[in-house]
Image (cartoon, rainbow, N blue to C red; front, side):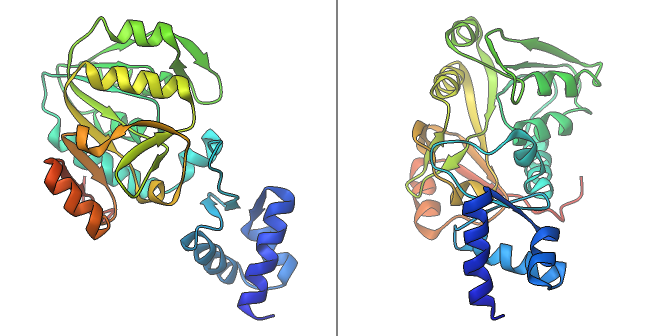
Length: 258
């Protein structure tokens, strides 16, 4: 079977089942696992599928992928971003980390920091930083989203308004070509906007997969951010826009040592 025909059939299977696995497709088409990985990478590059651990799923513009799949997606890139951010976060400061698997990676990168206060609406971040005895942790209240341990809603927004912190490190679900930061959950968007208002400096962390995704709710623009950390070069147009906005861009490499 030619690759073009196989790619067409993979999309049909994905639309039927909602998800495909490398092993399942290799068995179905009687080809090697490496062949299927190349096929899925090609479909992901075209925006037809979203790569996840062990396979791929259909991309959505109205619903986020599951927490486990998000956590396993591009772990090396997120770790590289987190190391770059952690190098720019000094000891003795206050930091807000919001919901997201990339901010969770940042939390792991902060385990060696001293005399820091971390505020968060992400229970996973709090659990990670428990291992750092030199970190004071404040969990802001709110409605618990069981799927990913996030706290959202008006109670969370009101709690955030009681603080003023040095740095906000936020993530988003998607990034539009014009630099808009997007998300799927309207309640989470309101929380992210409240975080940005209470921060002295704002940092966005988002790996390159966010450029291939679409989401319906707008958090704000990269123009509002002091810094943007990612793991792949931006398009020429967006890079030029960031320079005009005064938003510094750091492209972290997965090969950069801790």
